[in-house]
Structure formats: structure tokens, C-alpha cells
Image (cartoon, rainbow, N blue to C red; front, side, top):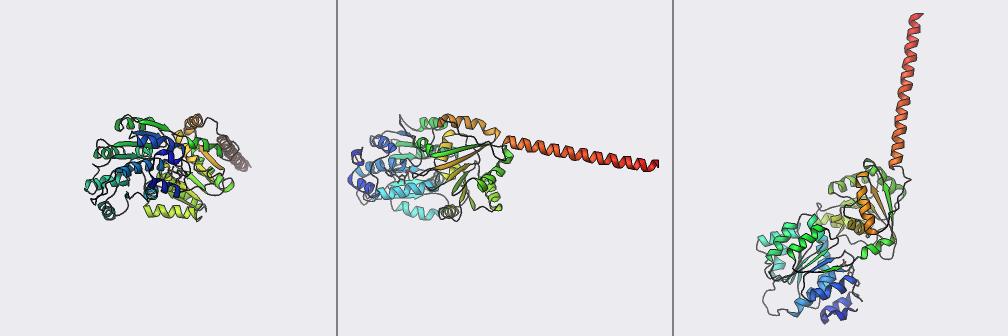
Length: 416
Ligand code: AMP
């Protein structure tokens, strides 16, 4: 199948070829006909599969076909909701490139930047609006954006949006759009929470699934380290000093965890920076630039923050905390081993995370090789604890012995 078999108009195809896209990816082949048939869609696809073009191209086609060429102000006809600013920006960049010859206008709005500038852009007229949920709700409350004309709503990275607590915002946004709208939901993972949510807001959706990351995980050498929880920092430092080299992405579950590990690594002389949603947009951009231009070589991130990172050149991924959703593991390690390179992933597993390993191994359909010989293994720790106990016992017994002999000397003295 070729792009010209997908019923896209010439101005759109021209932009596609200008971007050097030759053949559609699997998600594009499966999704574009469904969207053009005006059906609701629920798609399991991760970043890197070409999913952005999978929804942008047919949206442009639908809007282009029924474009209002009058001088009237343009209304928002398609709305794309994305959980993070980085992802919103990436979607916007692709939309601008594909819309280049269509006359359709796109804009992006997200928090952390001035509302005035965004109001000005919207007032000039927008066909496709890309937004993060919080800022969009604010703009609706202030009557800056009217969503009643939205014909196609896209919810991108739905699993993340639910994880980030946007569920009520999204329901509200969906209600504000036209009742006859078409809704497309994309999610990297499809846990029950997302399926239940989809059932409530989609109508008779088609399901599409692609699993590129699972295949790409073959190119990643994976290692698993069992370690007592309090020794994870020590093992992380050991691996960074002795085993892992190059550009490294370390995953932590919480923002707090990212900050703490960043401090520890800096104190130990590593060039590391932490990335999470509480940092400002410009701080996040600086951190990414520092990593891209080799001022740092270690990036510590939460899953949420890492989703928007467009870095192909990672040598290793270190799972400091294991994820409780197996697909997230696949997604994380898929960040390395790209562009024909092999990558390596290192996962630290404390006793409370063992059940996550079983779930992950079921999904990747193989066992992750375990590295037993390391200074923080549970066995090594037990042995060292045992040694310490023995040492302190022997110290105590030496101390007792010396006290005894002193006492007996004193006694002897007295006797003399
Ligand atoms: P995405 O999954 O949308 O983040 O896309 C991942 C990358 O693949 C982006 O850099 C896209 O520009 C690129 N891409 C998407 N579709 C194609 C295609 N059919 N041919 C070549 N590159 C593509």
C-alpha cells in the first residue's frame, strides 16, 4: 500500500512526500480508512509508530474537503488533546508541516505560557487546535475558545491523561464539543481503566492495534538486578561507575524520586539532570538541550515527562523503579535500541516489585536475564550483614575477654 492509495488529496500528499514519507506505517494503514469513514476509533499505538500522522492526515482530508473559503473567521473544527506540552508541540509541528498546502490553520495552547498570546492566535481563526487539558478548560471558561463547532476530537495518550488525573477535564471537554462529533482515542497501553473510559465517551468504535515496540525490544539487551530497596541507590551508583556508559535515561516513579536521585548523582560527580512536570517549560527545554548537546549524559525522568522526549540516541535505559504496567516497561526500554542500534536496559527490582517482573515477562514472552553477581545482591547484602554481625560479635567477645582479664588482674592485684 502506498500513500496515494489512501484517498488523500493532492495538497496533503505533496506535504507527505516533502517529509520523505514513502510508505504508510502499520498504524497509518489501519487508521486512516477508519477515520475517513467517519467512525469513532480506539487505537493502541505508542509514540514512534507514526500515530500522529495516522490521525492528522485524515483529519486534514476531512476538513479540506469541506473547507469554508469565505472570509468569515475560522472555527475550531478539530481538537487534539495531549497530556504534556512537549507532545502538544510535537503534534503541532507535524500538523503545520502536513497542512502547508491546504490553507487550513493550526494552533497549539498549553499552560505555563501567556494566555494573551494564545487568545490572539485563536481570534485570528483556527481549524485544528492542539491543547493540553488544563489550559483548554481555562480558555473555555474565559470564553476565549468555543468548542461547539468541533467535528473531530482526538484524545492522544489517553492512558497518561487518566494517570495524570485529567479524566473529569476530558469528559467536560468532550461535552463542550458538538454532539455529532467523531472521537478518536489513542493510547500506548490499554488497561481496563482506559477501556471503561472509552466506552463512556465513544460510540461504537472500531479497534486498531499495533505492537511495534514489542518487536523492537528484541534489539534491546535486558538485564535484571534483584536488590534490597534501601540498596538501590548504591547499586545505581555502582552500575553508572562500572557498567553503563553513554547517554542514559533513568526512570523513576515519582517526581520526588527524580529530584532525590538527581541530587545524589550530582554529589557523586555525574552529569545528570532530572525532568518532570513541575519544572517550567523553559527549564524542561534547557534540560533536553543539555542532554542532546552532551552537556549532560544522564537524564532522570518520570514516565509522564519522558513521553514527550524525542531522543533517538540513547545507549541505555535504567529502570530505577519498575513500572506496575508491563506495557510501560516495553515502552521504556523501546527508548533505546532505535535507528538500527542495539541498546541495553537495566532494571532494579526490590522484593516488593517482584510481581511486576512476572507480569512484564508474560507480556514480552521471555524471561529477563538476571545478573546475580553484583555487590548489592540480596545474597551479598545478607553475607555482608552476617559478616558485620560476626565482626561485632567478635568485637564484643574480645571486649568482654579484655574486661575479664582486666578484672582478674585487678582481683589479682588486690589479692597480692
Ligand atoms: P509518531 O509515532 O507520530 O511520534 O512518529 C514517529 C516518527 O516517525 C516521526 O518523526 C514521524 O515524522 C515519523 N513517521 C511517521 N510516519 C512515517 C512514515 N510513513 N514514513 C516515515 N516516517 C514516518
